[in-house]
Amino acid sequence: MFAENLSPFFDVAGFGVTATWKRADADGGDVTAPVLFDAETRDVFGEVTANQSEMRYPSNGAFADLADGAIVEINGTRYRARPPKLEGDGTVSVAVMELI
Image (cartoon, rainbow, N blue to C red; front, top):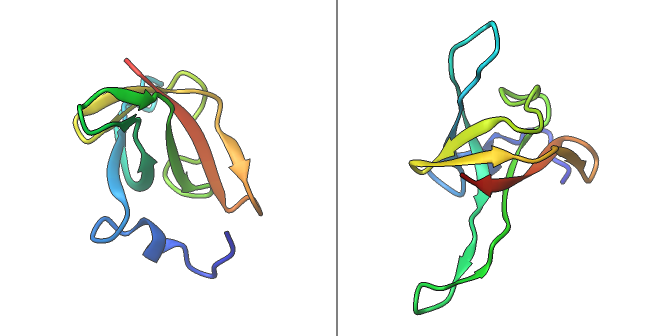
């Protein structure tokens, strides 16, 4: 993804959702920022058909230090982040999210 300004992509009035990183380090304090979230896929009967959720966020943003095992709350549901990876040109990072 190439763009001079990523904020329109992550706008919560558009495609973005608010995520809260439940930090457990010495700095303490939760970090909240807009992200793009792809939740698990469900069929018309509510059965899960694809169980992999992914969160995308600006690599140099509020979640820049997100690491494997971090707890993130999205839409009232808690997830554990798997190791984040840079995507495309590196301006966006993606982490697979494990439901906890």
